[in-house]
Length: 460
Image 1 (cartoon, rainbow, N blue to C red):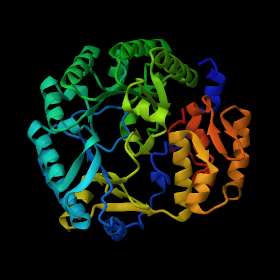
Image 2 (spheres, rainbow, N blue to C red):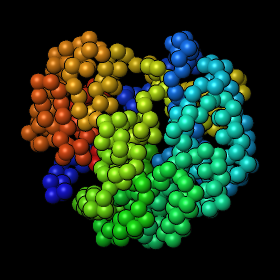
Image 3 (cartoon, rainbow, N blue to C red):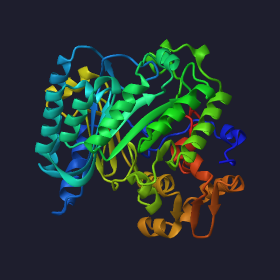
């Protein structure tokens, strides 16, 4: 890891998209309406030709009992748990609109419950939600069924229920074990609680346990974060997601409660990132890409070795690229060559469903250029390799001519040792894999024309 010097990390300490989609969600437009969504669903149904390809489903549960100051998610802070029952009724209406459009029993290979706090729902509500999904869709064997878990909202009994309902992967939000950092971000959860829950999850038989961490939080220092890293390595989750905190109080109101003077400086953040990578590698984790690490035997690491990584709105995935139905407030979906996003407020979401309409308020119909660039960017982000011949065969273009400007820009990255350019394609180097977002950004037509990148998180 010696090649990851502070100087190199500092050079790439710039904002950039995460490329869970291309074009990115900030390019969605309000001109995309329910009619466009219905057209895409009709095309999916007509295109099946009797052969159903699996769907992915994301369900957004927006409720949280307490506010975490760092949070940039779409959430509703409330202790009124009765609001969940009403929300489930509207989710059922939204599901009915989709099944009316594409038919009942469509195969599903991936389900993810996110938030907010999905475990805000009580046991009966979780049962009701999963029963709704299983009545409406067919869950395929070997699929990935995951749920985000706030450790403060579950015990071993609740984990057993999640396993009983068919979830096989858990993601625990840890962020940092340091008590002072937890106080500064208003999220108190003792390390012992997380260790106990992970042990329970393993005894129950969950296939994979993920832990989320954030560096760059208030009161963090490289030394304090070292202690958290040591605890995480002792915990030994199957997967680790390591995110950089982006302080954007002008965009995210909860972050205004964070004391800016307590935030670590740029050099400290770079040190935390560098030391985190070293610590995880020394502990035997595989660097999957961007901010993801996995144990060598985990399905995500296996997919990386075998060149089967995919990427969607939940990040890196082992599941093949497929259409995504997004359910709930602010959820994003992808059907064919379109993206759509639901209303971001509960009031608008409910109102549109009361009128029998899809709660879609914006989205995008992708152009041919968008589709070509999406294929290129996802190849770089997931495989770290682009074969010109494959692109030329799929899209009937001369890659070197079509992307002449981009290939010229890559020569600078080649000089820095991040990519190798050959007559047949582009190869991201082992060092370049740590900065793969920076490589992908070269092919982002929107980003190259737009210098206002501060809305994105840092690329490392």
